[in-house]
Image (tube, rainbow, N blue to C red; front, side, top):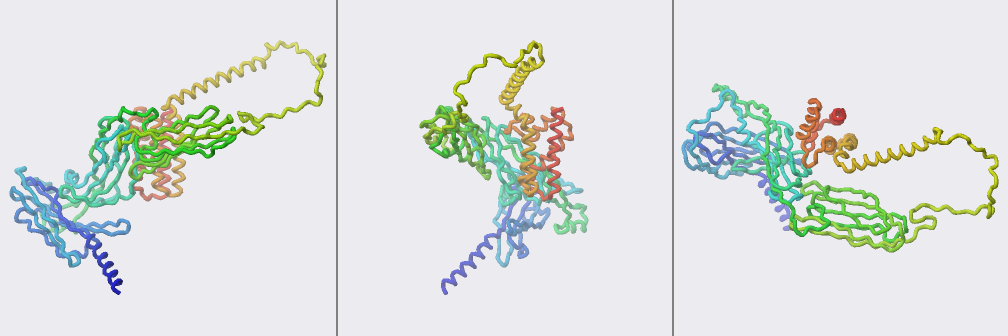
Length: 607
């Protein structure tokens, strides 16, 4: 009985405790240092689940030290995140100091479900400022751009200020707001990561806001974009600002001084208008230093991170000409896509084919994953042979040292192949004796007649001579062209640009049929940006949409095509973190627009 009572009491205590902890009542000002004759905003905000249970709000005595220009102005907001309902109510005042000095705004209080809540006191310092009060526009009392910028802005935050070349630095773009956002936001300008290899990190398609206090002001904060950057050059590197168009709701006042207008200026009756504000982030800077020059391993190829190496073969005892599968896996944290494939040193008598490379990359926070290299090797000679250990070296930025990894050597016993095959794998034909051991030579020509036509004068003779010569010239020309393309990486990328774009669009079309919005927009973006990178010879670390548009303009591409390209790219990039529900017809339009843009650019460049 006692045990059951204790359980019931504990459950009631936990329920009440969680409910009480979910309530908060706080005070904030837009600035703790105020010039004389300037106005400032004072807000009291209560957060809870049921704001209808609030009663008895009592503000502190403000008239003694301040002139109350407006207030209390009441506003409410509500949001539902993962099924949990939260709401808030704010009481705001616009105040103007009466005299210089330091003042303390005492606590405000209210009752929520018969429980009293109080705010903490706030200290204000009034300093000498402008001698004239600020004049407001009586015809339009909307909030100014400066005031919006103080209450809504974007911060670009990097987790490291100083990194090694190739070491990951994560940049996070956060939206800070104290204003009501009317509708979905749209990207105005994406940041440029000059001097970095960039990998987009996964973020929630719906922005989840939390509360944060900055300089005494309480903001709602949400992550809008994250990226993992790997410096490819040393020195001080800058990230250009990220620009976002934010539609905000602001109150429209009449401002005529009429008593009826003053009544309709009440927050309950006030008209609210949508104003589109362009928020810009700060320019973040990162200092990149070069890797140490001492104790560099001979097989170091530029890998930076923390890795593990494993290697294995599928069989240790084979016959000649039978294939052996050698699998090498490199896993850990770092830029897996930039890791160079380790070399394998095969003994004499082995043949090696081009490896198959696959990657599994995790892009949640720190870039990590696994790179798998599958080799196919074929022994041609019998005997017992040993394959040397596979070596891999990397720089560990956490330990600030180079580290080398080695697999175990592989000993393989190669037995002779089948008797019907030689070392090249070509079957031998069995030699049979003729019916008679000896055949006599013919002593006459029989009915063979001499051809009196002069061979050098026949067309078939010269055709037979010229045909191999023409084939040889064509083969040499094709070989030289292939070598030139293989040696010229830019030309190779240029020629495969359209093929890669078609492959990406085909994947996007399959995703469209399954209504996988996020993956669909990602593939469309890869098709567009990958095509432009290859076609315009732009390195991935230096690519930005603005730079690509600039290069296309230099190539006299029509402005209408550039506008279509910009429109499609921005729609896809924004939809990656806030995909709109546009249905199958909308996806088809995006797909057709992307394909048409690539086709038009291809035609223009070919012309």
